[in-house]
Image 1 (spheres, rainbow, N blue to C red):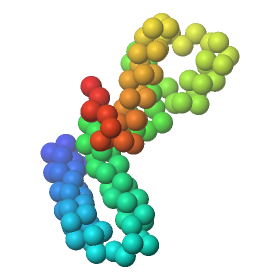
Image 2 (cartoon, rainbow, N blue to C red):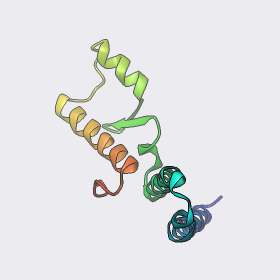
Image 3 (cartoon, rainbow, N blue to C red):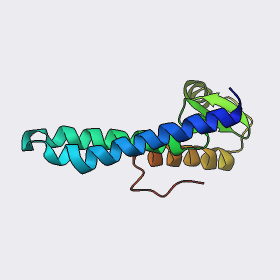
Length: 119
């Protein structure tokens, strides 16, 4: 697929998700009996998390890859290197900044209403 097709497909999926969310929150959830309100809240939250994931421009931020100074690291590889005190070619302050950025992206994805969209 070319990039324009991917953008169009992503836009269509986002539109479908928006319509589903609007119908669910506006009509379906309010019509459910009290004993199903918790399930409705969990379904609504799941849709919000999915929408946040789709809004992320860089999907690698969501995956198990962390980029540190342009180098991709899996979480397990990075953890092992840090435990073994291996030189990963990233200065301490830069490592802290990159890891904080990664954590903020993941927090935003998990709870988009609490945090503003990270840079």
